[in-house]
Length: 224
Ligand SMILES: [Ca+2]
Image 1 (cartoon, rainbow, N blue to C red):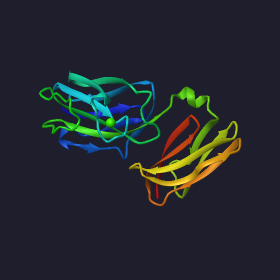
Image 2 (tube, rainbow, N blue to C red):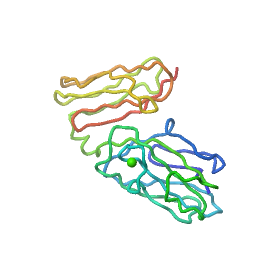
Image 3 (cartoon, rainbow, N blue to C red):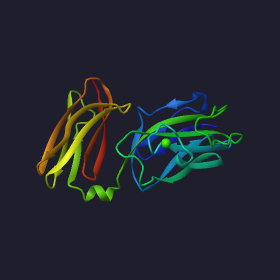
């Protein structure tokens, strides 16, 4: 009646079961998905008791899990199972979106992402969306890396421009608040560019590089 392991791309979360109640892992566990691509979300629930499992992504970032944002429903399953879903091509990109997964025993219909679960629980994660990889590969921006990561005082974002490009580099904290804009809608020349990135407080940050049809998000960790 609970999810003990949740796997989706770079999310791989081992947790206690329903006794935990609601857990918000959106600050610590995130992944990046492509619009238009189909994914499998793997979940391990109680092996001896049948559960219903459902998940949602707030694709339009309006703070509400609408019916059309329900990814899948698994009914009466136990042990390892997978739900598959396709990211809508018009979903919001380059913004931290909330993923919610919930499970409960089969007495619960789990059609509602906010109900009070008696035996089960909800867990929240963060999902970033970007345009399909194909668009990025054809873009003016290539070979973006951010090193070192984790970092102490500062880290460096490096990328190559095939031709002059107007772009922005923005730094968000784990709650999705903009904390710094190292490059603000500037036209930069072709060639390799290095952007220094630092942060005052230790923790998780997200660096968003966006220019033309290119959008990439890096998760970085400041250690101290
Ligand atoms: Ca929504």
